[in-house]
Image (cartoon, rainbow, N blue to C red; front, side, top):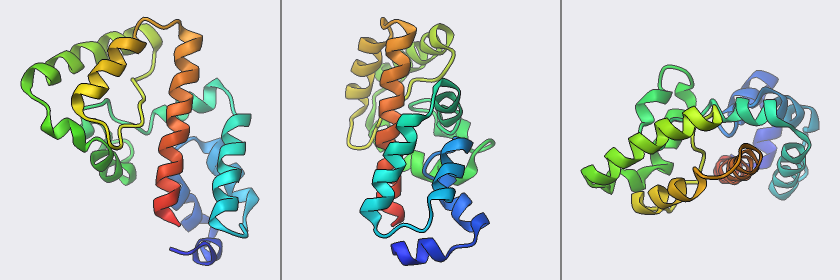
Length: 166
């Protein structure tokens, strides 16, 4: 859709479109309040600016809109509107062998237990092996460092989804 078409959406339609990009309610509401946008570039800049002004609760809310890497089916019950995108974004996991998938499951559980949120990575263009190596590297981080990294990854994911939207 064009930026003009996006601006012309009803509030409910725009909310739904933005929620497909990031499910954090404060981010979505702030983006709605910023309409209309003069260009897709202005929309992307505002999205990043708003994201940087949010905090831990908002980041955790955004993370809730993602399945665990390698387990897109977990998303369908909660946020069906993002499940298709997540499946495409994680397509690299489809090529994974059983050993990689098994290790990812184990590390996903350990990561969730340690940090209290799922492993967030901008999976677009990454192979299963690359994602496995990233979770191996990040699982030893302290909570504050990992939250900051995950929030940065969420910002990348949101940007990619917004670029596809407009």
